[in-house]
Length: 197
Image (cartoon, rainbow, N blue to C red; front, side, top):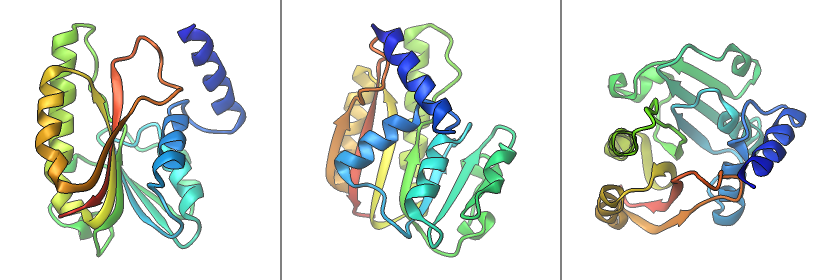
């Protein structure tokens, strides 16, 4: 069953010129929680290959802007989009927002980042949680008060405990496993609305 879902979303992404099927996870989250608005300034942590960036580019329109950061080599196809700028950079190396060409905090921060998986469940969960903690840690620099946040998490007891500590930093804090997620996957998404800064 999982693979039928995989094929459907994989083919749909190809047909609609998205770089990856993961775009439909963000689309479902956005439809349900109204995360992204026209004219928004958006940061995509670990954007590669860029389907979330593509979705945001369409959604924010010509007056909005999307900035993507990833340690991988730049996906030059994204540079064809007028409202998108991508950097080959580690989030930890961004000292000032001007380093990435912006002069104010972002309306929305999104992250579909995942570690290089080993297949060893406990190791992958720990690595994922380290990425999640890093993203939450940097929010105070990147996300404006009142802004929205979407992040992928590999489920584990430690992840659940950690997320409880972050809940109070948002007006609303929701979890969702989108329909396009493979059945076997342990991932889910956290949606934080109304960042308290």
